[in-house]
Image 1 (spheres, rainbow, N blue to C red):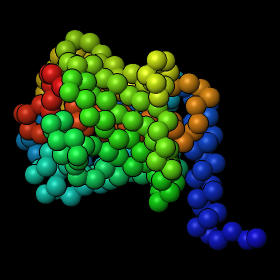
Image 2: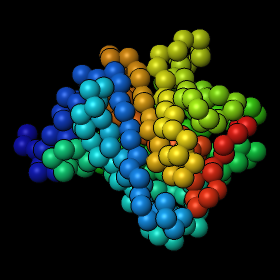
Image 3: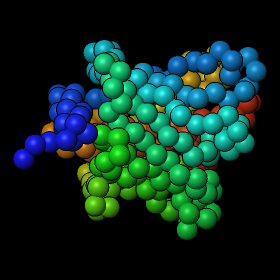
Length: 237
């Protein structure tokens, strides 16, 4: 059976993702500083470099959101985030719909869909309601629960890293973590350009590794993104 051009392209992207992700157990994500945003407070599309544990860039991520949505909805905004490899090919797409930004409304909590390649869902990150802690459920493409993520009660990056633990479904075993790294007092005070690290088992399914990247971006927007001079949720959850 002959493959269509689109199917061949998707297969090539899948093989590229598998080669990249099967070799790594750690990912570093560095948000780029936007000078216009620093000087004026005008919200611009976020851009990130995604690197391996050796500091080599493997992907570049760019938000694709219109100006009105960015500046009216702020950190709660829906977005499409496109992840591009070093050859300029889009390999992963993240879709975040508009959802309630308050944990007091359990019927419409945050979520993000991860597509790899673009148009093919491989997993979801769903916020789980909890009165005290930020919690998320990692799901596969069939919407089946696979892993859990649990953050600290005080989500505040003050002179130290903030860790969100990746756990087994029963939450008895910690298998990895998503860490927001402390970047220094000046950068923390005057920009929302954050650095993250993701650690997971080397033998974790490559699709789930892609979903972990999506979880990291959702956490960034929910807890560490800012609009103008207003920091998003720096304190008690």
